[in-house]
Length: 208
Image 1 (cartoon, rainbow, N blue to C red):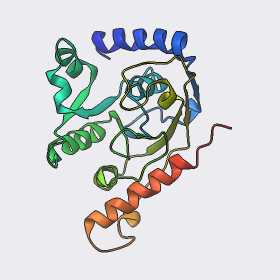
Image 2: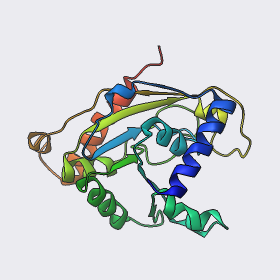
Image 3: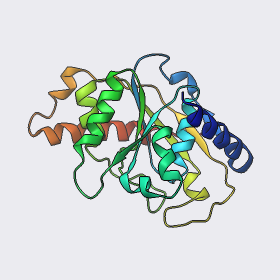
Image 4: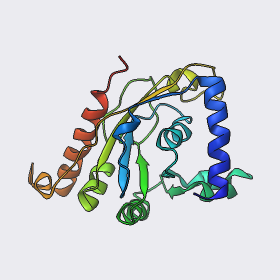
């Protein structure tokens, strides 16, 4: 873990406790070694630091749109926070290849199967990207669900509200080569099917 990552993680921890009463349930489901993929619904800009805190002390890598690197000051810091830039203007296979490389090297990455933050707080359909990553790596996939981040900072709002946030971690999903043969046809259909299985696992996680 780099000093920059550690510093921002500790700062995020302080803010999360004071402003959002952050609670993490199910940390025992996180693998203790090897590469694995975290998959969570996407409610807010608050999600990445919340996921990092849920996975602490293990550092994780994040996919984020390439334009964030153009931000003043923070744009220079994001690469040190394990940000993997994605070009959202066109299909960006380089970002997915980077994630696959990291997972094969034993690292941990967070992917939001919905692809973008929700507009209404509800779960959105899964995109095929995470399915491609699963097919190429077959690493364990840990489903997670965040509650309260939308109320704290919904999409389209720059205002942050002090609202409780909870992350609940589900049991890991393990995919095999046999899963890649199901629904034989176009590869995109296979990837979409894997993505939907992950999204179903996220949807099955309940706060109570």
